[in-house]
Amino acid sequence: MERVLLWNVCAVFVLLSCNAVSAQTLTSTYYQEACYWGTCQSRLSYRAQGEPTLQGIADLFGVDFYDIMGANNLDITKANTLANSKVKNGTIVLIPIRCECINQVRRTNQTVYRVKKGDTLFTIANDIFVGLVPYPEIGKVNNIQDLDNIAADQLLVIPFLCSCPNITAPNPFTIGLTYSVASGDDLTKIANEFGSDATAIQTLNNITDSKSLQAAQIIRVPIPGCKANFSGGAQDGDLIVTKGAYNLTTPADCVQCKCYGDTPTMHCVPNPVLNVSQCPSLDCSTNLKIGNFTTKMEKDGCDVISCEYKGYLYMGKVDKPITQTKEPTCPAYPAVPGPNNLGTIPGSSGSTPGASPGSPGAPGGPPANSSATVLGSQFLLFSAISVAATSLLVV
Ligand SMILES: *[C@@H]1O[C@H](CO)[C@@H](O)[C@H](O)[C@H]1NC(C)=O
Ligand SMILES: *[C@@H]1O[C@H](CO)[C@@H](O)[C@H](O)[C@H]1NC(C)=O
Ligand SMILES: *[C@@H]1O[C@H](CO)[C@@H](O)[C@H](O)[C@H]1NC(C)=O
Ligand SMILES: *[C@@H]1O[C@H](CO)[C@@H](O)[C@H](O)[C@H]1NC(C)=O
Ligand SMILES: *[C@@H]1O[C@H](CO)[C@@H](O)[C@H](O)[C@H]1NC(C)=O
Ligand SMILES: *[C@@H]1O[C@H](CO)[C@@H](O)[C@H](O)[C@H]1NC(C)=O
Ligand SMILES: *[C@@H]1O[C@H](CO)[C@@H](O)[C@H](O)[C@H]1NC(C)=O
Ligand SMILES: *[C@@H]1O[C@H](CO)[C@@H](O)[C@H](O)[C@H]1NC(C)=O
Ligand SMILES: *[C@@H]1O[C@H](CO)[C@@H](O)[C@H](O)[C@H]1NC(C)=O
Image (cartoon, rainbow, N blue to C red):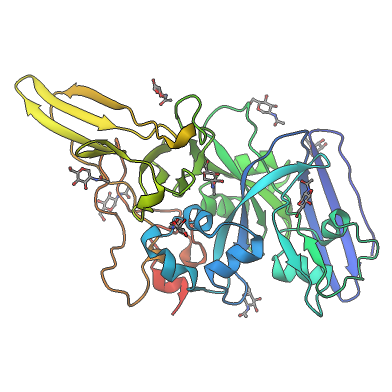
């Protein structure tokens, strides 16, 4: 088979390769994002193969289980059950992973795979890691001379291609997702699946003809998110959370920050499964916790006292300034979207799909239902809020 290599000297390289490996033939097109420095949070779109557990997926990619919970908006109060719940074959799970700059290309360096008997670089790249990495790249970063010759028990770094947002671009903040195109996909479908925008995907990937999209092509999808507006000096001041998801922050995961709304806004509350002995105080006053507010009607209007999480400081302290405002009427506690229904384990008691009981203090929080962008039972994230758990988990 012919091998075509296109090389651009611009900010982005396009590499089009057509590889022949005996019967295992796959044409894959992928971008390599050029870089000079820096790292960022990114996501991989992993299509579950077989029926792995969430903990098994975390172990496969070498990422933190609680970070997977957050990236997919899974119910933190059900973490123990979910860790060992099986995920249906084909379900997309977002993998939060650090994107680095290695040899002037954006790649991850967090996943180490131990070769099993019968594996080839091709099957590792395409079957185990579902086409999220071009197999010659595995050979390249692991200095494998003969791509057909790997040994059982050999440890391989799996360098997923990844993407960092253009920090000079205007808001809203995005997180780069690596996606392997499935047959039947088009840009609009992919955009809807991840709450992204077809034109933005097209531009980011330098796709001139949107009909040229091919199955197994690796593309980058910018997912909208929101950035923390924490105090200067906060250790988690660079926190970005994707829309519809959450992040557990502070060293002991004491605070849960969610991102929601049309103009995505971050709102932080105490982690509902606090590790009390490990956490600093999250009380702003005797009856006020971070992320909450109190109201008191007076003759001249309503006194609203609120307290916001403004970041984790050195010396184990949390910045949590109290503010007081006067409003004509007392605001109600708006609801913040609840966790992904996947958190509702079939047959478990006390399941509360949809909105969590009003987490107050969230200005203008939308109702819990999501919408048009729902993709059937394939997706954890954006179907997240409305797809029934039973369709995602293997009972
Ligand atoms: C999982 O689904 C894929 C298609 O997404 C299919 O090719 C594969 O055979 C399925 N695997 C199992 C174990 O059902
Ligand atoms: C990638 O990770 C390995 C450890 O798994 C480390 O030895 C290596 O230095 C890292 N490479 C880069 C470029 O950071
Ligand atoms: C980053 O964004 C800025 C502002 O929108 C733009 O001028 C610049 O070309 C972008 N850089 C890249 C590499 O896309
Ligand atoms: C985008 O693709 C066109 C043609 O395919 C090419 O001429 C151009 O240099 C590419 N731009 C970038 C930034 O890679
Ligand atoms: C960020 O927080 C400061 C106070 O700490 C506030 O004055 C400012 O308006 C906030 N900015 C945004 C974009 O919310
Ligand atoms: C969540 O935030 C913490 C603190 O900023 C960060 O270390 C961690 O990587 C974040 N996790 C994800 C999945 O973004
Ligand atoms: C709570 O703290 C203990 C002790 O450090 C730790 O083993 C456990 O994983 C923590 N739990 C959570 C949910 O972070
Ligand atoms: C916020 O305050 C209200 C009213 O005092 C209370 O019912 C609610 O449980 C509080 N929520 C949190 C997350 O502290
Ligand atoms: C959410 O659902 C309720 C009733 O089911 C409906 O009234 C409301 O308009 C919906 N909101 C959105 C944003 O779809």
